[in-house]
Image 1: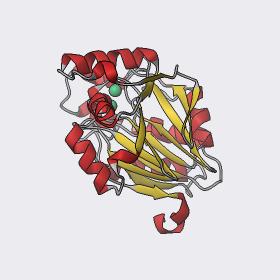
Image 2 (image 1 turned 90 degrees about the vertical axis):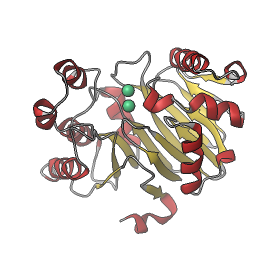
Image 3 (image 1 turned 30 degrees about the vertical axis):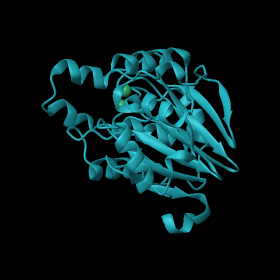
Image 4 (image 1 turned 180 degrees about the vertical axis):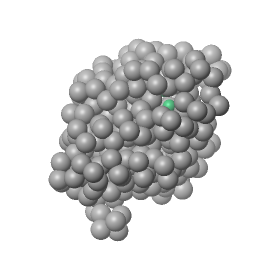
Length: 270
Ligand SMILES: [Zn+2]
Ligand SMILES: [Zn+2]
């Protein structure tokens, strides 16, 4: 299995998961042209993408999904409520081929198969119509992608427990958010149970999910205003180290392409 982050954060999110000839995207929050060029940059032919799994309808996750799906004749996979909003938004923005896009309805908590990849969705807590994370299995390997959640609830922890690679939100440093420039209503939204995870909450979720087995963690969806890559990495690493989980390999997913994880070459990733 090969996994590449095509971009992470409020400027756009997409993760490519490849197993054999099958590629799926988890989210597609970039304009079509950006998405295509980032796939190529990651060494993936856009034609190899077989489906787009959508976590929720916010534009930093879904803005390029309908355009890419209609151009490549591939389905959008998500909860029916999310599909409805995403396709309505795309139609409003003038995408005339919205009606031709294949929809695969996958209610939150259910499983489906995309060619060789097994896909399980699980509930998260975010201010969207039916937000979810995904556990994707290819052969013996599993990746869990979960961003945009105010709390780490049980279904999320259970999915994280099964994954070798965890792409998980570390949105903000709480003190930095509170003393930062955001207006109070926005601070409240981010800190709420349907907002975003702080570095500390992410550390806590990882402690509940990890054991002494080898794990790779990408910290994702970092706020540019209320966090820094160094701060997120240091805080989460320290949180885990103090609880005997210092073996987890932790990287930050930047706004641009990277990092990449390849189960056939794991020694190179260290
Ligand atoms: Zn969101
Ligand atoms: Zn987001």
